[in-house]
Length: 364
Image 1 (cartoon, rainbow, N blue to C red):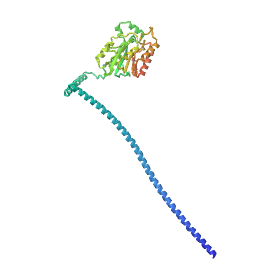
Image 2 (image 1 turned 30 degrees about the vertical axis):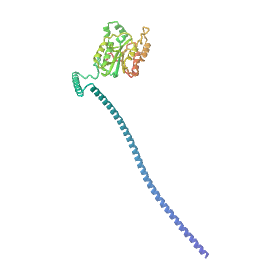
Image 3 (image 1 turned 90 degrees about the horizontal axis):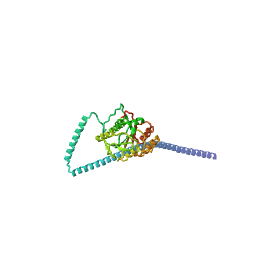
Image 4 (image 1 turned 120 degrees about the vertical axis):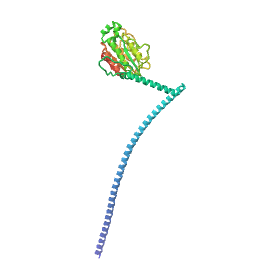
């Protein structure tokens, strides 16, 4: 009986364990199913969120690019607005000037209709005169004040800067301008003045001045200063004054006055540069026509001879008298016995943003 009860109890215990095992397995199975479904749902949700993040990042990038374009457009608009305001200010100032001019004319007793008719008549007269001049001119004359045609067989690209508002031309009239060789200079100095004026080197120097004045802008002012031991204006009575390039009659007087000069004496480049200081306003372009280094300073040398080293020292002292920031254009007709002149004048031209020219005998 006891064995039977023991077998029944053992059987009951096994059945209960089986039931518990089955229940735990079911719980585990349910947990696994729930966990799997949660993982699938999380993965799908993450993919959707990542896609949305990528889309938002693209929109942010496009928005930043659009912001840059808008800023650039705004900068352009600001610049256009500033320019427009500047133009408007200038126009307003011009209107005020014209209104003041009209008011002044009315105060002086002029009537608008009479002034307009008078101006129209003057314009018609000027147009007719211009038409006649154009018809009578054989070819266009450009904007030069004069016409100059040299006798040379070649044309040159000189590189000379002929612009400027106030242009000074310095012409060496010392005895060395008679010839390139010392022996010929001595020979010509013993001849008559007419022969000296017809010396080839001197004629080339005068033609160089004619060529320069023919190329100057008509709206500019100029002055030609001759120098040997002293510096004087080529046209008497014009010391310290600027002359108008547009005054052709005065240009012809200047050319005739230069042809009356007989080269003679030593060379004081310092006095020539000091003469530029008397011009008011100061020149903004300088042309120097010479043949070598100076032989004296502001006063005569002590001895009868000047060495090459002394001439270079006199040149360096003279250069200190030049106005600062003004280009110096050198036209050098070198003579024998002065080998350092070309290098010194070339350095002056380069240092002042000018040009250096040593032309051949058939120029200009």
